[in-house]
Image 1 (cartoon, rainbow, N blue to C red):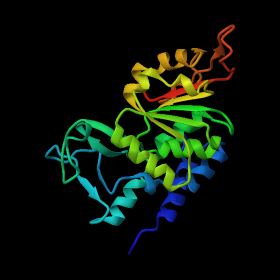
Image 2 (image 1 turned 90 degrees about the vertical axis):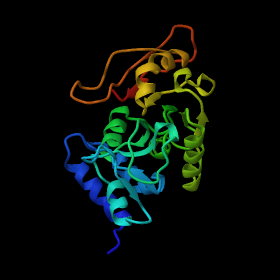
Image 3 (image 1 turned 180 degrees about the horizontal axis):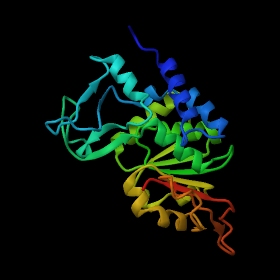
Length: 249
């Protein structure tokens, strides 16, 4: 019996309603989660993150196992691996390698955006576009022309643009190294790094290039996210009070 994507999305939202690190009081986040079809952003072939006994990661093929694929898409706790070894490993079967791109689990993305707390009309810089799913949620919250997203891999960036365009969303997706930031379209009210490399190497540099000075950690120590509140530099004319940064550890 075919599985209904909308029903799985609602069930996933209900699980996050009950989770201590779920939607919380962010009704806007629940609304956009239900409105944006996550399955639209997931490739037809993905690897499961936990290896099998032989060390290989199982491939989930939508054409061969549509129900299993869709259930994996809406798993609250598991990411899906979309690229191994910078694309050198084709999605042709079970494999192993470096996870060079993935779509984070629904639970992780919900918690990230809840702590980031973007508001309508604010400008957001995202480091690590990936499939474009988090980008879509951000754009749905902040509005047209407010989100700039950077992706280092040109093939992944191109597919993300197609994914976003297919839903009528218009964030600016730039192919480039997030370590350099993108001050040309700043200043930004929120900066979010959804790639570990970006989070570890580029967060401070991006804040500086965007005309912000780093403030203190705002998120609780029991969360995997770090929220930053910054003040504008005197005379810079670029900073905005209340700036927040969130990244993966």
